[in-house]
Image 1 (tube, one colour):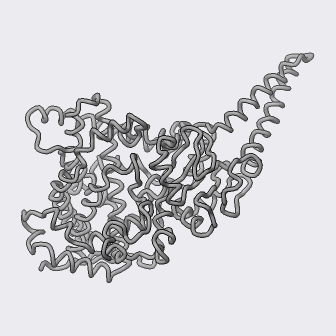
Image 2 (cartoon, one colour):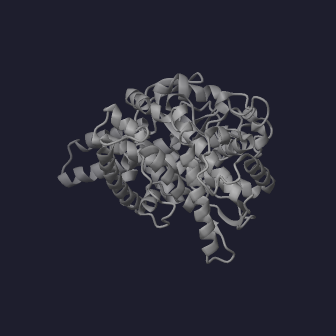
Image 3 (cartoon, one colour):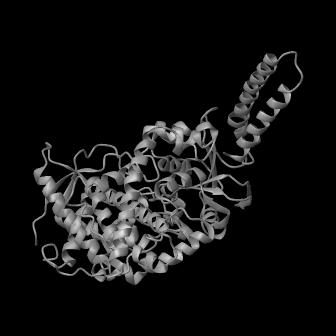
Length: 538
């Protein structure tokens, strides 16, 4: 419950009780008085919180705000028209601001968006201890994944991150490229088979399905030392249950989620709605699966250890109970495959939209890879994949243009200051990669154009020519930046190289507008449906 809502609710109840205790001639009259006063004061509460606060009581009246705020639901209708990240991008471009922007969602719940590099750096780096995960989001993630690295705060998070650091070291990731590549080849062969046997007219496949199964297999092998063989099993129960854990949100569910946060950050996950029942079903299966995986891993580890995967590192540390290990497994399996599969879908989409980029990328890949790399056990080295500049330019530009997590929410853990503005404890802060990654002040006048060339110039391979380190927020920054960023980028590069080498790709409906889902991740709504043409071996 927000501090101001709790205060007004408490005052409402206290006044109702106090006034109803005034002596009356009958018990019935006393009860009636209490009911009437409760209704009157509750109405006053709603008026004060929803109607008066944004215009009279907010301490942020000096911060710019988008137009067309409604009296009951703020900017929610506009926010819900498309994925929130796209709306925030439009506001960033259209509303003059001094680095901060305020807007209002269901029930006129207030949000402050950090836009300037200085504001972002304060939230993510210099004052990161002043901000924690937004309570409703934290509760949702904790219900789904337990208390793993993604949820931990403060010293607990710092300690966990230190434990897992060896599993994400530069040297260790370089040793995983062969796994990434082999699974990429397995994926293309499965796509070839699916496309040839498709009963659709015209023939087409949905990229999301195989992408999710592929990245699940990769995090299983590279992270846990287990091959789930999801690619070869289209009806993989693990894959299907994983999708239930992070389903896209309808506009109605999104409204309920934001509105329930007014009352309690834990209310939404306890509502008896279909969304929550589906999530709970997925979580039950997923946790049971991870418990069995841990048991098998502990039995095998006593005999031999093949490589230092994520789970092995956690077990060797001796820092976690079995339940905590299961939480970590759930966290890395879920977060480690959904984000990369989403990014891969977007790469396929942009290659279809820009056939000239697709052709150039295929030429680079084919001119660099061994001719028999797809048909034999020829080793693929990290240095070979890393030597393909256009491949990395395309992947980086896609990650910039379509960040899988379009926005993140933080909450002030204590009274603090942001860009010289006082921020009371409990204030919700938004950082939007989907907006900042498109800021013309940071990326130049062509920020809204998909252009891999920006990553090709001298000294631009890691910056894309941006003028500030905080211009590229896809993996965030600071102590809570994505620990698996290098892992995800290497995995994505291998999958894209395997895909573009084998197929010419074309969208089934090239004129159809790209729509994205609401939720923690912004995925292509249709899963990217494409027609494939097999490119002959060279």
